[in-house]
Image 1 (tube, rainbow, N blue to C red):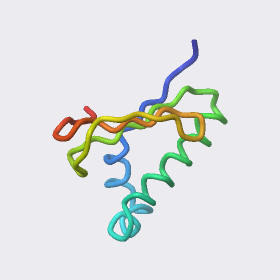
Image 2 (image 1 turned 90 degrees about the vertical axis):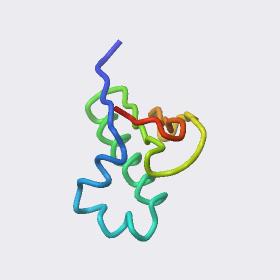
Image 3 (image 1 turned 180 degrees about the horizontal axis):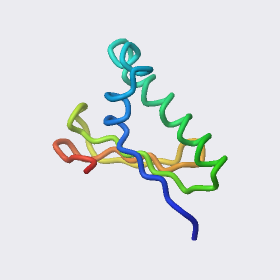
Image 4 (image 1 turned 90 degrees about the horizontal axis):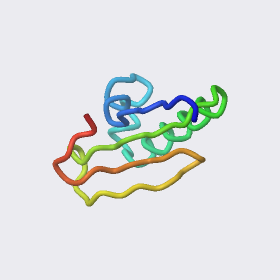
Length: 82
């Protein structure tokens, strides 16, 4: 079955200095870069990865999709990734 790597996307974006300026300019691009980086790392390590973005930051309905071979989940509005 393999090991899983589960990432709280906005926690990483908000905590890493590399994303600080980018987040202010273009949050969607910051999400895309994070997903791409996680996908590359997961492929290298052989992990199944899931990145969760909660709707605490952005309004919207729940959705999930596979991007770069990893699962990307957006929670319902008001729902945390925790």
